[in-house]
Length: 388
Image 1 (tube, rainbow, N blue to C red):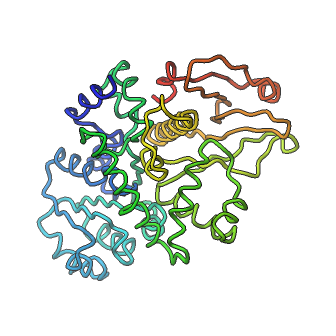
Image 2 (cartoon, rainbow, N blue to C red; image 1 turned 180 degrees about the vertical axis):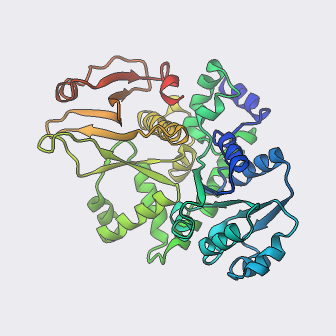
């Protein structure tokens, strides 16, 4: 049944959630649009779809090509005018390759008033640092993740989405996965992503002293999804300093490989706040790292997979919808624990996740500590409202 749902998906054009808003921004003002996201999540595809819909004369620039970099690094308005002459829209792919890209974009933006500009980059850290200060007040920024159920729901009904769950828990939601028919092809793609693309941006961000240990660190993290992570234990296992491990985790997060969940605390004496939980932005990447593509019914880590899936989907949803929500987990010294706590200006909600539909007790210690909090159990039968 899941395979049939995936084959049906292959025939559908998936509309990315941020597309409509970007089109509105490009139509209403001349601010630069910057799209951040990991490699292969569809940044170039979404820009191509947007450009096709706004019917302008477009100059597509790959920043890996030196002929374009020479001009875009020049800080010379006349040279840049000659490059974009006759075009209404400039698209710069992998813009972080351009030295001083922020200053040069500022010169372009201020010097050519009617030119629309879109830039993409694979690292939020590197590209944001290069363009943020020079382009203050001149830029709209977006983050593009692997596909989300929020996006898949536009072309799939509730029944179809539920059929996709087990496939997504194993192979994740990189767009390329949904274009391939066989599981062998999906595994090959994900292994290529983890070896050819995953570390490339991390290694280029800073001078990495122990590049070979990035993969080992990720593998250790992959086995710990759903658990609190001890940086000291990771440092010991990798024979690295705690500070180096912390730096690598920070770079991996800024390159959209992983993300952290901190502990929620309103009572410093009772709540544990020292350690984070670390999740993967995409489960296909996680499973490729540990070389396990077994279906959920054959696995002993399905609880962690389901938890990672739900929290990642909620993160995408909250980012795209700009809800302003902050996500946490909760644990006390006395052993009380809640999988996910979400804080909004309107209040606090708590959630317990169970892949199977078995009953659980309400977290009495949490509800006693936070009596106004909303609480819900989420399982594979009830998860859709949570992620949509």
